[in-house]
Image (cartoon, rainbow, N blue to C red; front, side):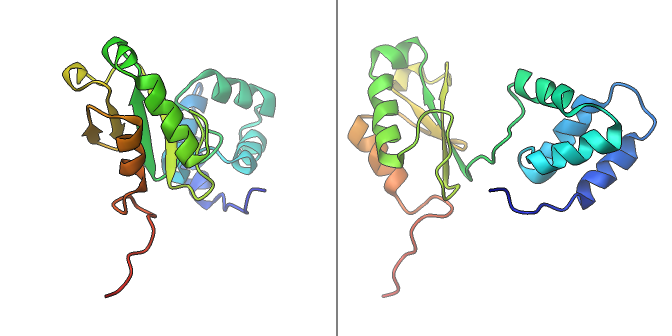
Length: 164
């Protein structure tokens, strides 16, 4: 269930575009930049304020891959599935991470710590198989080493370190 989200910042965005034509996509982009995703309650509010049907808004949101209807994790895992990574075991890396995090590709953990994604090529073919977490690249992975990386405490929202 979605928690109550204030439209205060959305009102500022809507005010900025008031009276302009063809601004739905920029409004959606700015709204997502502010809130991190497009909460359904804000899309309903936007529909009422802009006098645009909710189905039209959802049509745009679901057509463009840039828009998210659910929040992403604080750490984005991108498993490369380009040719070099594919033949070097990318599928096994994805499966190991999916099993470890208990999510499928494109999903986010319930604690919003990780989102698991599949990408085509990250440009590190000589290190295949490769994954990136945020901007950090990990290469020559095995399913075990990939699991170890996501279990480490370095990720935001990681398990608390015990005091000595």
